[in-house]
Image (cartoon, rainbow, N blue to C red; front, top):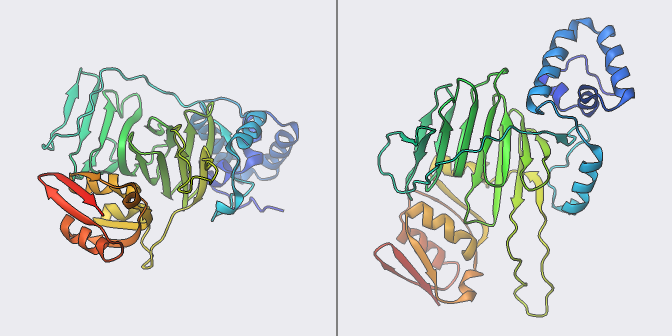
Amino acid sequence: MIDRSLFNIEDFLVDNTFQLYCAGKDKLCISYWENYIKAHPEQEATINDAKRLYGILSGHKKPLNSQVDSMRERMDFDQESFTLQIRKSYTWLKVAAAILLISGIALVYYNNTVSVKPIANLVTNYSTNGAERKKITLPDGTLILLNARSTLQLNKNFNVKNREVTLVGEAFFDVTHDKNNPFKVITSDFNINVLGTTFNVKAYPDEPTSEAVLIKGIIVMEGRGNGGNSITLKPSQKVIFYKNLPVLPNIKQSSPVVKRPEITINSYTKSSDSTIVEMAWTQNRLEIQDQSFAELKKTLERWYNVEIVFTDDEIERYHFTATFKNENLVEVLRALQSAEHFKYEIKGNKVIISK
């Protein structure tokens, strides 16, 4: 029996029976919570606030259990890949996130100044070069660290009529709490609704996956390609969205094609010194955890503002695990050479890697 007498607003929001009560879809849940409120008048104000916030976060739309079941079947989760089991209370929500279609957005990756650029008088734009990061304070007090080759766009009505931003690339968010105005992050693969929370989002268009890692608070994620179905995350959880890219056969010709899941949920990764690997970049640390050279390529290109070219497919399958802090590109390549044999040549901003 769950003791709900000490529940706060966030506890109510992730309780599956409370969600069904708010959505008005289950008579037993409605009856239970109506009786509960009568028996616990001291919690009525908290419950009303939680119910109101559920309406805000869900766009006042009702959850559809049948859609949840079909989504789970499509995703074909491998339960053994979960390092953090999702408890029953972390039920799926049906959230219709308000998506503002923004036109006239220019993706600016090579802006060396820290100034804010208005685009067609519609949005405010922040961007970074390769090897560049920016710390941004938004008008509502939200703090953002923008990683290399990334763009963050704000609607001109930000903090007036909405708190909505569009992200291309990677950013760390420490969102100022405002229970009346949720903060929304829009990416090409998913949207995130939050109140006040700390999380990291990685959504580069040229990578096969996009991900979000929750550090503190609660976020509601909506996969844009999954019919609006959504997930409620709690701290330490990580969601990875796999993009609809061609699936390559395994290394061995006789091996079957590896089927990719649409989405996985597990725990964030910690290094030997308890650093959260997905957040290491905010501390200027390059954490490599059993990554192939092909997977590492994009990270190194952004980190050092270079272009990497492999002359042999076998090199791309080399795997590395390492930690770097403040090392330059040559130092990193030499360290990787100690694990796998390869040669490299640097011509301007191009790095050619061969056997």
